[in-house]
Amino acid sequence: MQKKTLLIVDDEAEIRMLLKEYLELEGYRVVTAANAGEADRALADDPDLILLDVNMPGTDGLIWCEQIRDQVQTPILFLSARTEEEDRIKGFRAGGDDYILKPFSMEELSARIEAHLRREDRKEREKQQNREYSKGDLTVDFTGYRILKNGRDIGLTKMEFQIAELLFTNKGQVFTKEHIYEKVRGFDREADAAVITEHIRRIRLKLGAGKEQEYIETVWGVGYRWIG
Figure 1: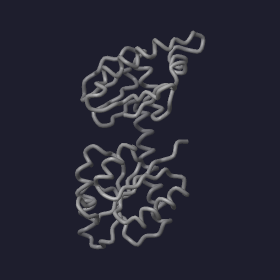
Figure 2 (figure 1 turned 180 degrees about the vertical axis):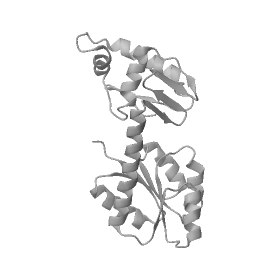
Figure 3 (figure 1 turned 30 degrees about the horizontal axis):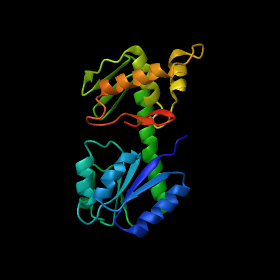
């Protein structure tokens, strides 16, 4: 099973290192950031959960959370020494999913992280059962064999959709052209890498790759993987 990625955003290096070491021992992949600017760049790692300090110089945690909330559906857990009820309310109104008071025990923090990730996994399973998945401007309709961008069908052929579905449902995993061909067309057929190359090109064109966001990454000398 692929490790869950956690993003820790805190201006105190000692706290970042302490949390990183502990959570890595718990089996997570951990990315850290010292401020909002670094946190913006770290979002490219597609974290499954964000631990966010409220008190940071420059753009504080509350403001940063508000700035990204419309684009990021990941659970955000605030870490703060502010104990007043008003402060907790501000955290939730900014888009936070939890508010953890400092100092906290590592065991409690780990338990809260696990609870939020379990909730996200349940939501993901429900989406799969409904056979439709939406993230950002993209909606994948598994039953209708179509992908919609900003609500409009991008017009994939059946084989193009099958390739996109294979990559999409195995996000981050690299597939060779031969493996894609075998998965889509069947093991009894001779693999044709050129066919897959052309289909990938068409899928990218229809997704509008390069204009706003790249969805399918070429791993040179190996194959392709979904990164959108």
